[in-house]
Image (cartoon, rainbow, N blue to C red; front, top):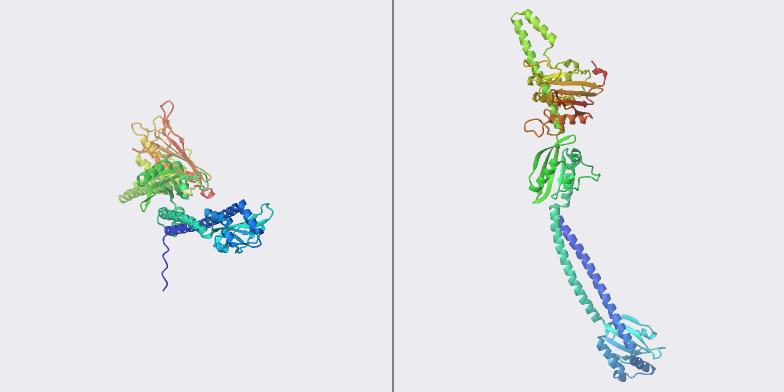
Length: 583
């Protein structure tokens, strides 16, 4: 059975132990170095002290004369020397300076003075190097034990020859006592430093736990990998904001949706405050509210450039720690475009159902005539159906549009407009024989423009003042609201214009701004529905085309002539350029 693996502790505990060990090791090394340097300094001071005493004694005239006198004698009298003035003088120096010994020798190395009178007259136990005329310091062991000693030559009165030496020693025990005292002082400082290191390590441990949220390194690495996978693996935009309001992260989708600078650009928003990074005002206010109140903000609709999106701001907390907030951006441009295309399909389906119902009614009428034996009336009714087609088309001049799909779409819009009391017609300049190969975007743009024009015509003042009054005016002479569509093909590009009999577009109003509408309680007053215009422009620009307001309409300068607005669109890549599409 495998032995249980030892518990290694948490990351913060291991880091604390590592820092404490490093500090303690460094502190011990420094303290040892300081103790060694202090011992060396004390030893050097002892040598200099002994050398100074020896030099002072060797320079005393009486000492020099007495030593020189003894150097002239063949033999020494130890008893006389022990009671003599030289012994008394040097012993006095020893007692005053605290030296271990102060010894004088004559030129043969025989002791003239010694703390132990019994050793006077004997040769010194160490090499009398000063007799060679040099000064020397060393640590040696003699008759009085180990000592730091200095040896200085004693010169004759004329200074021409060495007549003896003075040897002064400072006991190693005294030096060691000074070293121990210094070591104790250094140790106290070291203990205080180690205590401070321990407190710092404990603080570091708590700080690391707060910074890492209690996560281990492998968990942090896994979190970083997961973060990268989430940020750059999703289609939604993500922006992270710290509690201080600094943008800490944003993914590529957020940069593209909001039109932010690239990561390598100096203007990159990462590292900048959210309110100084060029984010939309609505989003900035939502982030500020979420950071201050801690409440989420969802369902924010934004439009930046050609993109439409829904944003949400969610505050983030972990273990009671405020981590800031996350901004989520979901691109709804494709969804809105798909909805517009589905609306176009639904319009055609509704028109086809209406035409099927009308055609069924005609068949029932024909069946009734035949059942009643009214053959002549049945023949006449059938002739009328053949002449006019299966169902009467409510769009005048629609024969100018020869593409089957586009013709059916315009006819379906005509049916809807007719039900609302608006006449939809094809302009006299239309001559469209090309084949539509991508009907989705073409019908989405055209459908949005027609829907807005129909709404504008219904809410407008009619066509009073126009030169041409369309057929269908009622008995009171009021003009029927109308919408006119002109279509033209150029290569693979579809050009179209939609005019209406409404009141026109107010001066200075951007009808393509997101949220523009004339509905009651709307954010802005615009032309028709308003919201579809921005979507139609985005769809056209995605293909390299555009939608624009060619004529805002309204009253003329005299204030008498009234005209509706004219919108134009250019949609590349939706028509076939081959001859097969020609009719």
